[in-house]
Image (cartoon, rainbow, N blue to C red; front, side, top):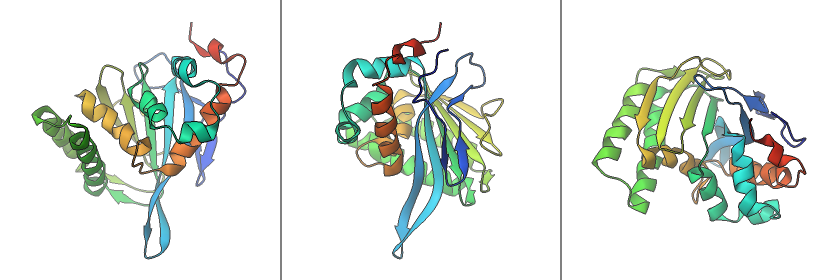
Length: 226
């Protein structure tokens, strides 16, 4: 696979996100779209909890560039449609969340699922099937503890399958912990990270900056895997 000069790795809070990664069960390499920190204000201080990186299969760059090439990073950052095209685009996404502080699995999954449920209810896609899918997420996390440096991986397919994997560090896991077939939930995981009310504004900014530059590359269309 050809590599445009803008496809580089990133370091966020000392955690390295490589430019390209494989994924178990796939012969594809995924390109780092962007990465950033997730945290919140507590007693006047911004507390950092997690670093998040979003990877996409190569054809995603070509797919997105067809509509968004020529837009600068500010224009992309201000467009909800751009980030919606990332979330719902016809290509695979891999999300890596690496912990900065220790988090119990139940606490981590509670916040993730609360955000996903709130989003699905807001767009009218939450029903019995989604409630059952949320319960699967809670169950797979409940007995885990995530020390600093450990990672959770989500793989989102365009058909709506969500796989969740765990790693003791930032390396790709050899297998997945659960596979959930539910499109609204699969998209909600990434939507809550980079959508209208993002848990990581830094990740949104990184995606807009890096992809706007990548769309300018003369050879971005060579990224399609043979």
